[in-house]
Image (tube, rainbow, N blue to C red; front, side, top):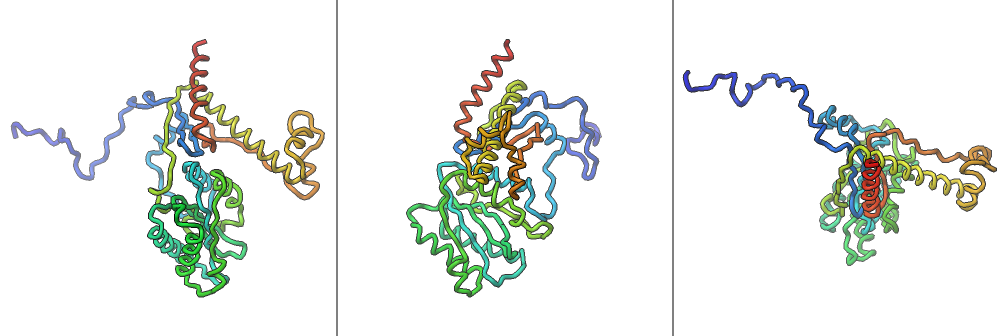
Length: 339
């Protein structure tokens, strides 16, 4: 009919029609920066990504759905560390322990239901609070939860918090065991902002804290996310020279921190001061080979960190302190490019 457009020029495709093939040569990657660094201000996390990470994300499209959870994997542990590190450092969390009595049932759905009911009671009692929880297992195989709690007003008082936690968890589990009521929970205040990160990196990462191959669902989660004091993310764009310099500096920082931790661990095992460990042989000429010395006494040398990902990296640091350092690195890289 005259005056009407043909079906080949309709604006909306027919239902079930195949999608048109992508047009070759219309990439937008040239409009993106070579790299970025995202600082979580007031928190302890920075994320560095280069163009390779962006390209991988574009090729994969949307994030694929994760399969059934059978263990607390290294990637899941890293995501938990990043989640905790993105919380502001000025508010220290409470560290809770929720355990089961001597007689308990192996039912992962029941454990998660107990946690859900406890979370609902907790949010009704403390509407300004939120927490990140972690599931672990004791040597006897019984599960227990560790929530890191932010947002409880100091006016509540320590005794009132402890009494509510013990009574609420006892009622949710419904064991009826008086010993469980007395010793089934624990509440403590963390003394530093990095204590939670160290806990996840150390104690919670032990193999006896997870049950590989057992289908227990998620090993960690967040409740009341809107009440947790997350650090605001600030992204800084970097050109190629700046991105390489920032990435190199961050990698050296991570290796230096790892070396310091290994020296302290060897010092504790040998009952020496860290300075003595270094002077006896850590760099260059070695009077003492610490690996052989520890193996002779039935102990192990702490492993050296190996960084394999050259496209993106997560750094646990004081983001506010590094804000000024990143600007200096950018100006230094720009001045070098002009020489």
